[in-house]
Length: 158
Length: 158
Image (tube, rainbow over all chains, first blue to last red; front, side, top):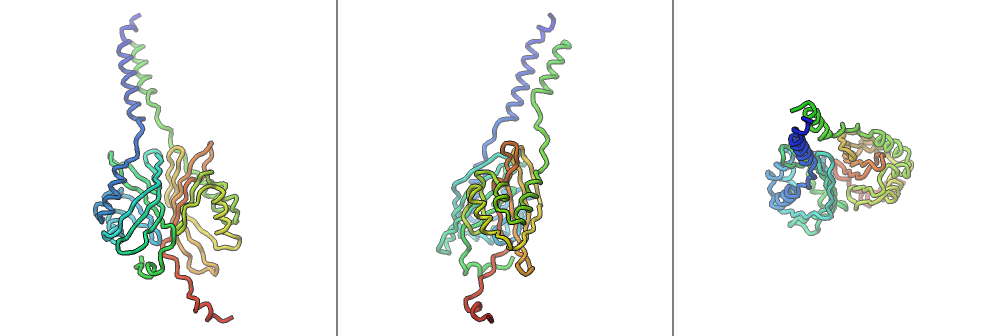
Protein backbone atom coordinates (compact mmCIF):
# COMPACT_ATOMS: atom_id res chain seq x y z
CA UNK A 1 0.00 0.00 0.00
CA UNK A 2 3.03 2.25 -0.11
CA UNK A 3 1.86 3.46 -3.50
CA UNK A 4 -0.81 5.64 -1.91
CA UNK A 5 1.94 7.85 -0.45
CA UNK A 6 2.78 8.90 -3.96
CA UNK A 7 -0.75 9.76 -5.09
CA UNK A 8 -0.25 13.54 -4.62
CA UNK A 9 2.94 13.39 -6.69
CA UNK A 10 1.19 11.50 -9.43
CA UNK A 11 -1.66 14.00 -9.43
CA UNK A 12 0.77 16.90 -9.63
CA UNK A 13 2.65 15.33 -12.51
CA UNK A 14 -0.57 14.67 -14.36
CA UNK A 15 -1.72 18.25 -13.84
CA UNK A 16 1.62 19.55 -15.05
CA UNK A 17 1.48 17.31 -18.09
CA UNK A 18 -2.05 18.32 -18.98
CA UNK A 19 -1.31 22.00 -18.43
CA UNK A 20 1.75 21.93 -20.67
CA UNK A 21 -0.15 20.08 -23.39
CA UNK A 22 -3.07 22.46 -23.20
CA UNK A 23 -0.79 25.45 -23.62
CA UNK A 24 0.86 23.80 -26.61
CA UNK A 25 -2.51 23.09 -28.22
CA UNK A 26 -4.08 26.43 -27.42
CA UNK A 27 -5.69 27.69 -30.63
CA UNK A 28 -3.97 30.71 -32.03
CA UNK A 29 -5.89 33.53 -33.62
CA UNK A 30 -4.95 35.08 -36.92
CA UNK A 31 -2.42 37.89 -36.33
CA UNK A 32 -4.89 40.63 -37.17
CA UNK A 33 -2.71 43.35 -35.68
CA UNK A 34 0.07 42.49 -38.13
CA UNK A 35 -2.36 42.51 -41.06
CA UNK A 36 -3.81 45.84 -39.94
CA UNK A 37 -0.27 47.16 -39.57
CA UNK A 38 0.44 46.25 -43.18
CA UNK A 39 -2.56 48.25 -44.42
CA UNK A 40 -1.62 51.20 -42.21
CA UNK A 41 1.97 51.20 -43.46
CA UNK A 42 0.82 50.88 -47.06
CA UNK A 43 -1.65 53.72 -46.75
CA UNK A 44 0.99 55.98 -45.28
CA UNK A 45 3.42 55.19 -48.09
CA UNK A 46 5.92 53.68 -45.65
CA UNK A 47 7.76 51.26 -47.93
CA UNK A 48 10.58 50.70 -45.43
CA UNK A 49 8.05 49.84 -42.74
CA UNK A 50 6.24 47.52 -45.12
CA UNK A 51 9.42 45.67 -45.99
CA UNK A 52 10.00 44.90 -42.31
CA UNK A 53 6.71 43.00 -42.25
CA UNK A 54 8.05 40.32 -44.57
CA UNK A 55 10.02 37.25 -43.56
CA UNK A 56 13.63 37.03 -44.72
CA UNK A 57 12.67 34.57 -47.48
CA UNK A 58 9.45 36.31 -48.43
CA UNK A 59 8.27 36.61 -51.99
CA UNK A 60 5.58 38.80 -53.44
CA UNK A 61 4.01 37.76 -56.73
CA UNK A 62 2.57 40.89 -58.30
CA UNK A 63 0.52 40.96 -61.49
CA UNK A 64 2.35 41.69 -64.74
CA UNK A 65 5.75 41.63 -63.06
CA UNK A 66 8.22 38.92 -62.08
CA UNK A 67 8.44 37.66 -58.49
CA UNK A 68 9.98 40.08 -56.01
CA UNK A 69 12.17 38.40 -53.37
CA UNK A 70 13.75 39.68 -50.19
CA UNK A 71 13.50 42.81 -48.05
CA UNK A 72 15.46 45.20 -50.24
CA UNK A 73 13.64 44.29 -53.43
CA UNK A 74 10.28 44.38 -51.64
CA UNK A 75 10.98 47.83 -50.24
CA UNK A 76 11.98 49.05 -53.70
CA UNK A 77 8.87 47.50 -55.20
CA UNK A 78 6.50 49.23 -52.78
CA UNK A 79 8.36 52.52 -53.09
CA UNK A 80 7.58 52.44 -56.80
CA UNK A 81 4.12 50.91 -56.55
CA UNK A 82 2.90 53.35 -53.94
CA UNK A 83 4.76 56.65 -53.74
CA UNK A 84 2.25 57.72 -51.09
CA UNK A 85 -0.73 58.32 -53.32
CA UNK A 86 -2.48 54.94 -53.15
CA UNK A 87 -4.92 53.91 -50.42
CA UNK A 88 -6.09 50.34 -50.08
CA UNK A 89 -8.98 48.71 -48.26
CA UNK A 90 -9.44 44.97 -47.83
CA UNK A 91 -12.74 43.15 -47.42
CA UNK A 92 -14.35 39.70 -47.59
CA UNK A 93 -11.37 38.38 -45.70
CA UNK A 94 -11.12 34.71 -44.77
CA UNK A 95 -8.33 33.06 -42.84
CA UNK A 96 -7.28 29.43 -42.50
CA UNK A 97 -4.74 28.03 -40.10
CA UNK A 98 -2.31 25.73 -41.85
CA UNK A 99 0.05 24.15 -39.39
CA UNK A 100 2.51 26.84 -38.39
CA UNK A 101 1.24 29.28 -40.99
CA UNK A 102 -1.90 31.27 -41.66
CA UNK A 103 -3.50 31.51 -45.09
CA UNK A 104 -5.45 34.72 -45.67
CA UNK A 105 -7.51 35.72 -48.68
CA UNK A 106 -9.80 38.55 -49.54
CA UNK A 107 -10.64 41.31 -51.95
CA UNK A 108 -9.18 44.79 -52.15
CA UNK A 109 -10.00 48.21 -53.45
CA UNK A 110 -7.07 50.44 -54.29
CA UNK A 111 -7.55 54.10 -55.03
CA UNK A 112 -4.74 56.17 -56.51
CA UNK A 113 -5.42 59.79 -55.68
CA UNK A 114 -3.75 60.79 -58.94
CA UNK A 115 -6.10 58.66 -61.02
CA UNK A 116 -9.81 58.42 -61.44
CA UNK A 117 -10.95 54.84 -61.24
CA UNK A 118 -10.37 52.56 -58.25
CA UNK A 119 -8.84 49.15 -58.85
CA UNK A 120 -10.74 46.13 -57.54
CA UNK A 121 -8.94 42.85 -57.04
CA UNK A 122 -8.32 39.80 -54.91
CA UNK A 123 -5.33 38.56 -52.93
CA UNK A 124 -3.93 35.66 -51.00
CA UNK A 125 -1.26 35.73 -48.31
CA UNK A 126 0.75 33.24 -46.30
CA UNK A 127 1.84 34.42 -42.86
CA UNK A 128 4.69 32.77 -40.98
CA UNK A 129 5.63 32.99 -37.33
CA UNK A 130 9.28 33.64 -36.56
CA UNK A 131 10.37 34.01 -32.93
CA UNK A 132 6.82 34.76 -31.76
CA UNK A 133 6.21 37.49 -34.37
CA UNK A 134 4.20 37.09 -37.58
CA UNK A 135 5.59 37.97 -41.00
CA UNK A 136 4.33 37.78 -44.55
CA UNK A 137 5.86 34.83 -46.36
CA UNK A 138 3.96 34.94 -49.66
CA UNK A 139 1.65 37.58 -51.08
CA UNK A 140 -0.07 37.42 -54.46
CA UNK A 141 -2.86 39.43 -56.03
CA UNK A 142 -4.42 40.52 -59.29
CA UNK A 143 -6.98 43.07 -60.41
CA UNK A 144 -10.45 42.01 -61.53
CA UNK A 145 -10.14 43.77 -64.87
CA UNK A 146 -7.28 44.65 -67.21
CA UNK A 147 -5.53 47.93 -66.52
CA UNK A 148 -6.50 50.80 -68.79
CA UNK A 149 -4.45 51.02 -71.96
CA UNK A 150 -2.83 54.31 -70.93
CA UNK A 151 -1.50 52.68 -67.74
CA UNK A 152 0.02 49.84 -69.74
CA UNK A 153 1.74 52.36 -71.97
CA UNK A 154 3.31 53.98 -68.91
CA UNK A 155 4.39 50.74 -67.22
CA UNK A 156 8.19 50.69 -67.00
CA UNK A 157 9.91 47.55 -68.21
CA UNK A 158 10.55 45.10 -65.36
CA UNK B 1 9.20 7.91 -5.34
CA UNK B 2 8.19 4.30 -5.53
CA UNK B 3 8.69 2.29 -8.66
CA UNK B 4 4.98 2.60 -9.41
CA UNK B 5 5.20 6.38 -9.17
CA UNK B 6 8.21 6.54 -11.44
CA UNK B 7 6.49 4.40 -14.05
CA UNK B 8 3.35 6.50 -13.91
CA UNK B 9 5.32 9.74 -14.05
CA UNK B 10 7.22 8.53 -17.08
CA UNK B 11 3.98 7.51 -18.76
CA UNK B 12 2.42 10.89 -18.09
CA UNK B 13 5.40 12.85 -19.34
CA UNK B 14 5.99 10.80 -22.45
CA UNK B 15 2.43 10.03 -23.49
CA UNK B 16 0.70 13.14 -22.21
CA UNK B 17 1.73 15.23 -25.16
CA UNK B 18 1.40 13.17 -28.29
CA UNK B 19 3.76 14.51 -30.91
CA UNK B 20 2.28 15.66 -34.19
CA UNK B 21 2.70 13.07 -36.90
CA UNK B 22 5.38 13.68 -39.47
CA UNK B 23 4.06 15.73 -42.39
CA UNK B 24 2.83 13.81 -45.39
CA UNK B 25 4.62 14.18 -48.71
CA UNK B 26 3.09 16.71 -51.07
CA UNK B 27 0.30 15.07 -53.16
CA UNK B 28 2.20 15.22 -56.43
CA UNK B 29 -0.42 13.01 -58.07
CA UNK B 30 -2.85 15.96 -58.06
CA UNK B 31 -0.36 18.22 -59.82
CA UNK B 32 0.46 15.51 -62.35
CA UNK B 33 -3.20 14.77 -63.03
CA UNK B 34 -3.93 18.48 -63.49
CA UNK B 35 -1.15 18.83 -66.08
CA UNK B 36 -2.21 15.68 -67.95
CA UNK B 37 -5.89 16.56 -68.04
CA UNK B 38 -5.25 20.18 -69.00
CA UNK B 39 -2.99 19.05 -71.85
CA UNK B 40 -5.79 16.70 -72.99
CA UNK B 41 -8.28 19.63 -72.86
CA UNK B 42 -10.35 17.58 -70.40
CA UNK B 43 -12.22 20.35 -68.61
CA UNK B 44 -14.40 17.99 -66.59
CA UNK B 45 -11.33 16.05 -65.53
CA UNK B 46 -9.52 19.21 -64.48
CA UNK B 47 -12.56 20.47 -62.54
CA UNK B 48 -12.79 17.16 -60.70
CA UNK B 49 -9.42 17.97 -59.10
CA UNK B 50 -10.95 20.95 -57.24
CA UNK B 51 -13.05 21.03 -54.08
CA UNK B 52 -16.76 21.71 -54.52
CA UNK B 53 -16.28 25.22 -53.12
CA UNK B 54 -12.92 25.89 -54.74
CA UNK B 55 -12.03 29.29 -56.11
CA UNK B 56 -9.97 30.32 -59.11
CA UNK B 57 -8.42 33.78 -58.83
CA UNK B 58 -7.42 34.60 -62.41
CA UNK B 59 -5.72 37.81 -63.46
CA UNK B 60 -7.93 40.56 -64.85
CA UNK B 61 -11.10 38.64 -64.00
CA UNK B 62 -13.45 38.23 -61.09
CA UNK B 63 -13.09 35.23 -58.76
CA UNK B 64 -14.58 32.01 -60.17
CA UNK B 65 -16.49 30.09 -57.53
CA UNK B 66 -17.21 26.38 -57.43
CA UNK B 67 -16.38 23.28 -59.42
CA UNK B 68 -19.05 23.77 -62.08
CA UNK B 69 -17.90 27.31 -62.87
CA UNK B 70 -14.29 26.11 -62.93
CA UNK B 71 -15.18 23.45 -65.51
CA UNK B 72 -16.88 26.07 -67.67
CA UNK B 73 -13.87 28.39 -67.34
CA UNK B 74 -11.37 25.67 -68.29
CA UNK B 75 -13.51 24.52 -71.22
CA UNK B 76 -13.74 28.09 -72.50
CA UNK B 77 -10.10 29.05 -72.03
CA UNK B 78 -8.48 25.75 -73.00
CA UNK B 79 -10.34 24.39 -76.01
CA UNK B 80 -8.73 21.71 -78.19
CA UNK B 81 -5.94 23.21 -80.23
CA UNK B 82 -5.07 25.95 -77.79
CA UNK B 83 -1.49 26.74 -76.80
CA UNK B 84 0.63 24.33 -74.81
CA UNK B 85 1.07 25.02 -71.10
CA UNK B 86 4.25 24.04 -69.30
CA UNK B 87 4.42 24.21 -65.51
CA UNK B 88 7.23 23.93 -63.01
CA UNK B 89 6.91 23.57 -59.25
CA UNK B 90 9.22 25.74 -57.18
CA UNK B 91 7.95 25.08 -53.66
CA UNK B 92 5.68 22.65 -51.83
CA UNK B 93 4.64 22.69 -48.19
CA UNK B 94 2.28 20.34 -46.36
CA UNK B 95 0.45 21.29 -43.16
CA UNK B 96 -1.87 18.55 -41.96
CA UNK B 97 -4.95 18.70 -44.18
CA UNK B 98 -3.63 21.63 -46.21
CA UNK B 99 -0.81 21.88 -48.70
CA UNK B 100 0.78 24.72 -50.62
CA UNK B 101 2.32 24.64 -54.07
CA UNK B 102 4.04 27.47 -55.86
CA UNK B 103 5.39 27.44 -59.36
CA UNK B 104 5.81 29.03 -62.72
CA UNK B 105 4.27 28.44 -66.11
CA UNK B 106 4.84 29.24 -69.75
CA UNK B 107 2.37 29.22 -72.59
CA UNK B 108 3.81 28.78 -76.04
CA UNK B 109 2.40 30.89 -78.80
CA UNK B 110 0.50 29.19 -81.60
CA UNK B 111 3.55 29.42 -83.87
CA UNK B 112 6.02 28.41 -81.18
CA UNK B 113 6.90 32.03 -80.53
CA UNK B 114 8.38 33.27 -77.27
CA UNK B 115 6.10 31.98 -74.53
CA UNK B 116 4.22 34.17 -72.14
CA UNK B 117 5.22 33.35 -68.60
CA UNK B 118 3.63 33.65 -65.19
CA UNK B 119 3.51 32.24 -61.70
CA UNK B 120 0.92 30.50 -59.56
CA UNK B 121 0.07 29.45 -56.02
CA UNK B 122 -2.29 26.62 -55.15
CA UNK B 123 -3.80 25.77 -51.79
CA UNK B 124 -4.73 22.11 -51.58
CA UNK B 125 -7.13 20.65 -49.04
CA UNK B 126 -7.71 17.09 -48.00
CA UNK B 127 -11.43 16.30 -48.19
CA UNK B 128 -12.58 12.87 -47.02
CA UNK B 129 -9.02 11.62 -47.35
CA UNK B 130 -8.59 12.93 -50.89
CA UNK B 131 -6.34 15.85 -51.83
CA UNK B 132 -8.02 18.49 -53.98
CA UNK B 133 -7.18 22.02 -55.07
CA UNK B 134 -9.05 24.57 -52.95
CA UNK B 135 -7.60 27.87 -54.15
CA UNK B 136 -5.74 28.57 -57.37
CA UNK B 137 -4.29 32.00 -58.13
CA UNK B 138 -2.00 32.98 -60.99
CA UNK B 139 -0.84 36.01 -62.89
CA UNK B 140 1.56 37.02 -65.64
CA UNK B 141 5.14 38.20 -65.47
CA UNK B 142 4.54 41.02 -67.93
CA UNK B 143 1.55 43.02 -69.17
CA UNK B 144 -0.37 41.49 -72.02
CA UNK B 145 0.68 42.92 -75.36
CA UNK B 146 -1.62 45.51 -76.80
CA UNK B 147 -4.09 44.12 -79.31
CA UNK B 148 -3.28 45.08 -82.86
CA UNK B 149 -4.75 48.36 -83.98
CA UNK B 150 -7.74 48.08 -86.32
CA UNK B 151 -5.70 49.74 -89.06
CA UNK B 152 -3.03 47.07 -88.82
CA UNK B 153 -5.65 44.39 -89.29
CA UNK B 154 -7.15 46.02 -92.35
CA UNK B 155 -3.72 46.65 -93.85
CA UNK B 156 -2.82 42.96 -93.82
CA UNK B 157 -2.83 41.31 -97.23
CA UNK B 158 -5.78 39.03 -97.83
